[in-house]
Length: 609
Image 1 (cartoon, one colour):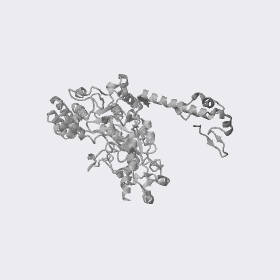
Image 2 (image 1 turned 180 degrees about the vertical axis):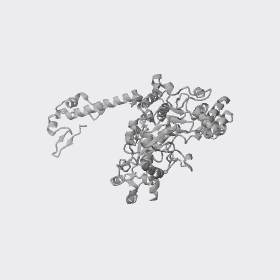
Image 3 (image 1 turned 90 degrees about the vertical axis):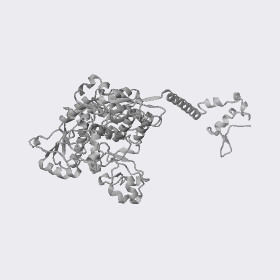
Image 4 (image 1 turned 135 degrees about the vertical axis):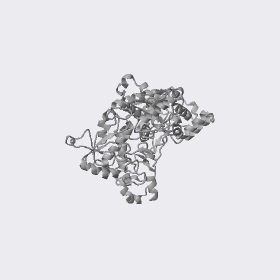
């Protein structure tokens, strides 16, 4: 005969686990024997339910039962909600992004300092089943590391003088030049006066610095590095500045000694050119980090530009669609400069040649355009771009934002639109009222396009000019966002073979994909060239210098003293902490790798200790 299980006390009596001995004796009649045949239990004889419901007899049991019921109801509601809502939409600072509720492995792909360097949080990108054509390269082990250490903060020493800067070229040429001038002012211990911009370039845009960039943010962001003023103090107005065009691609010592000597003597220097005046490589880590803070953090566009950029991105991402930002540099000035006339009429080619001969600072006048195309030195034509994207696997429903001015030629953009009808630009996405402040302001339009391009899911460029370099570098800095760098030299040869029917579409597409397997913006070290002009631009690839890799090395404790001189004691600095087994042992003394003394990265240096 089965009975309810009881606990035996030390005195030999029996008690229910939830009741005292006296209670068990009083309620003994409530316990009824249960038949050994469990299928024939006489439930009518059981008095347990009233007993459990008695508030005086079993308060703990009632609480436990209530909690169980609440748990079951909560779980049922959770599963109902997950099955009912396939799409959870999140609105982040004005941008509508979506992520499937069942995609547990979705990741946020921005860098740790995203909001410091840009206005728009990047979109969520689920790892699967997001199509490969939209997926960013694997870069989880990399992050931007540009925060300065206490050692690099502005010192209290008196400045040597003032630097006036005239930024020359187009918007992105001026952007990189101003970033260099910030670093140069730091090297020279100088006060930087608000830069003036080139209003006499091809576009003759009359915008000044404050029309394009957020002046207050620029000054505030760099206040711990250099002092920046709106204009020269009154007592310096009578001083005639010494005008200098700094030597291109100079190292820090050129400015630290030669230029600083002139600054101390004249008190006011004016640099007439800013483009390419600082070397890409061979500079200290503190200088390189400052260049990135200036370029990617401090030079933020005005609220007017960024506000409209947000709207355009939102409209492009309608229903959370991804989009390509296409820098199609098939514009009149670029074609005249490069001498590229493929697919143009003879009259159009003559017009471009005439323009090239009239521009005095363009040194090359007689150019073999077809030869340049076969070398991969020409912008891709609209038709070539359409075939290129199709070969890579982008469907004809792909949304494309055109980062370009007016496309040159009698057929213009039509050959691209025939394959990809969803082609937009700022003029087709914005209203007339929204575009009014941007009319005849080509630098403001370029700033608008720049922002939309940086925030795109995929960026593709057809000519490696200043815009392409700046956007590519900014996207690397923000987490290696997908950027397609076409191998034009090999592609145009394949394109000609396809047009001549020497190769099938299947073979053509396969070869194009194979050619570009490693050209999607994955982490690669900046290429150092024999000459500065032949090497990779610092701003187009700030790794190394502003990008760090999480270390996997193990530092034996006996080597702490030997590497201490190369380390800083500030755990809040932006460089990577040593990834060691017992990091707490070192936290009091040793935190980040000291780049100023130019050691090798942790992975390489410690294996030789």
